[in-house]
Image (cartoon, rainbow over all chains, first blue to last red; front, side, top):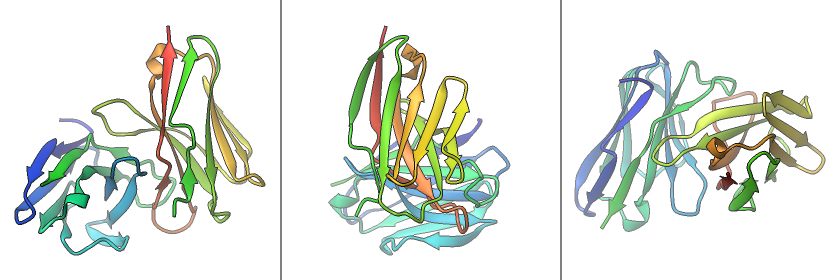
Length: 114
Length: 113
């Protein structure tokens, strides 16, 4: 595997389910990000991890819970989601968390909440 | 409230001609700007960037222009090629602090052979 991979690519879940999105980067980076892209809206940053510590949390509801066990893996744990949480969830990584550090994106997980 | 806007959802251009994609922003504190390109079923990939101390940055067929007074930037692609057909996202950030990118909604470019 190369670059940034995300699994699953598609996920359909009910509002009472608990699921997790997984991201893995094979680039040796030390910063990872979760973004959300809802229909007709721009990508919105949700979480930033640098050296496995959360450095940014953009007022995301607690039903989204990130986890970064090491610099190569990032999870987004989902529980009690709402239909409006249906969106494309993108993971990214960079070497360093500064703005000049290019972010490399995964292909995304398309989430549908019924 | 959206701080970065791409008002044209789509653009069609003949192969070999110039493509001009536009982006406006509202926050005058933004000082670093980027363009990303996205193919279907793939994540966005970085294309080109510009710092607010410059008004132009060029990389091969791609040139980004920044007009700070108008809070406007544009991406020029010359000559356009069919492989350039993709969705282009404009993003803005602050040079200090965490890598928090504010994206536009994207413009879908179609280059007609």
